[in-house]
Image 1 (cartoon, protein in one colour):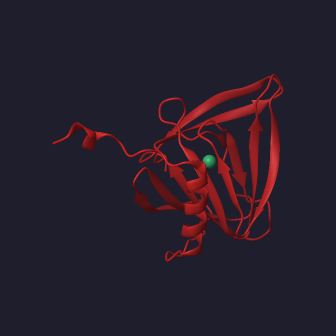
Image 2 (tube, rainbow, N blue to C red):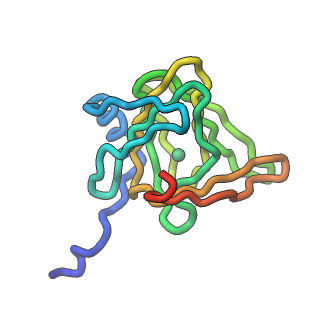
Image 3 (tube, protein in one colour):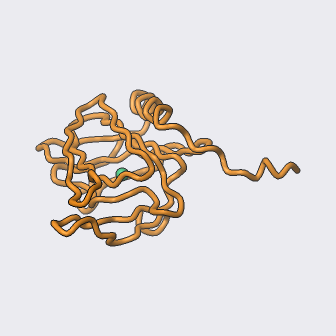
Length: 163
Ligand SMILES: [Fe+2]
């Protein structure tokens, strides 16, 4: 067996992630569920170098600020809103990091590179559904706290244990 067969698949470009997220969002066959206790999330596809998740957000549900894998195996991501509206908060680095806020409606796609710290929340009064593509597949997320002193790592969440 050639050793090259053992190499992990190459990560996808952010342009490819954006196109895949839009394609998967437009071709969903799984119906999401809305759960009050915590957000509903299912991995709907695992492909070469990437995976796709379907998430359902009731009004008020959201994530902490997070990255996609910390320093070990960071993943880039694309998020396509399938229905409803989500608000994305992206940390802008600097001596005094700030948050950029972006509203995403149905059919819109947001792309984050593998170093970006962001969070998402449903600030609307209606449920929302989103389709997320990560490359490489998401193994961990590190959460952060942001205050006037800066951005501080908080928790590490791991696939299979925390979601
Ligand atoms: Fe994320």
